[in-house]
Image (cartoon, rainbow, N blue to C red; front, side, top):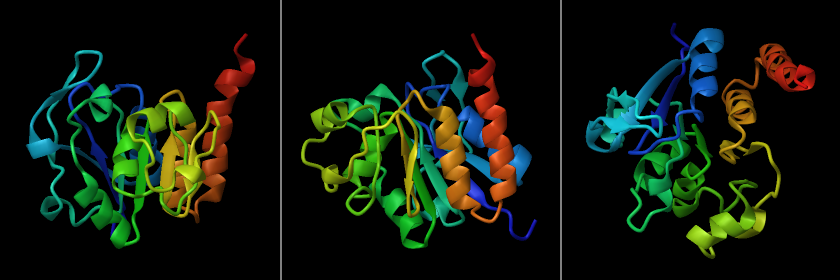
Length: 196
């Protein structure tokens, strides 16, 4: 497809297995996107579940000039003493008008890259994000909500919100597909509405 969009998913050691599945699978299956897995140095990483992921490529800027969007998947390592730095990749995607998203501790990578300076955003709680990245640029734009927040081309979510993260990310990437997104939202919401 000539207009096929490519989304990069950044995985680091200890990635949260539940945070990317709805977004990656929905993007490919329903929106015709191409999903590529990225890691630091292109090295295999292991998720919380113990599942091992061999990435398509590294998270280097030069290898990812084709990305229309990038999603940073959470891991406790983002909140560790020596967190990885993917600011160069996030800046490059943002500079060409791409969508930049982060979920759970992945939001710390966005905070460190200055992505929240002008964007409303959320994370795992105001105290949590400030506890790990005190006084980050844009901390006054924090939204204390349990669902994903999209502002311009920046999308963020707490780790407990993979469904709204997928919806907000895809709505930002495919604003013209509102009918499909409404169907997707209804499908996701039904699970919670009918559970008892």
